[in-house]
Amino acid sequence: MTDRKDELAGNLAKVEERIARACEAAGRGREEVTLIVVTKTYPASDVRMLSELGVRHVAENKDQDAAPKAATCSDLSLSWHFVGQLQTNKVRSVVGYADFVQSVDRSRLVTALSKEAVRAGREVGCLIQVALDAGESGRGDRGGVAPGGVAELADLVAGSPGLRLDGLMTVAPLTGEYAGRQRAAFQRLMDLSTDLRRAHPAANMVSAGMSADLEEAVAAGATHVRVGTAVLGVRPRLG
Image (cartoon, rainbow, N blue to C red; front, side, top):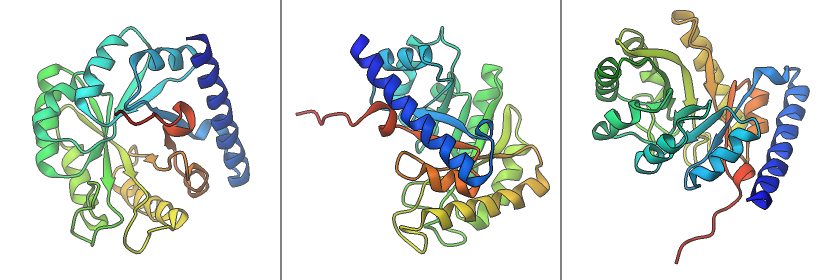
């Protein structure tokens, strides 16, 4: 375990240096960007070591993996972010541990999240997932609502009991006009965030950027970056 913790510590230090350099280049303070470590497919023991190394935000994308992991690590001071496409039949479980759901992309999901948050007596932070590979009113290949649908969905979240509208999230698209243009994609998200904050000033989270493109996200103005591989490494395929 000591070897693994040393590996994680080294990787974290490299990622921290990348974020710090990106902030400096963008004229931003390091404290303006929060690192979320994406722990999907990795064991609870890694989450525990990351917590010991100072990580405070972790993310998961599948409830069947996240729920038992969150339960095992419930004694830790961590904020759990759910970042995957979320089916309504998993909402009750996810609301049990997730402090933030970053993949809100349809009204039916908002209704289900609100119902379960109220039932559980919790307030869940919600980010609208924006699909920049969709048309103005379509949906993206990896979930998300088109830019044209953000305002309506945001209003619905803001008016739903048990939910708190915190901001926007995107994944750099693989197709469409922003494919291969991460900086432009993240700048588009920032423009949408500016629009959103006119109606909802407190919804100032902008979650964008991953291991390969966190610098572009920081340059555009992201407040949160979601990093998995650069911290945890590449898991060998099973079989």
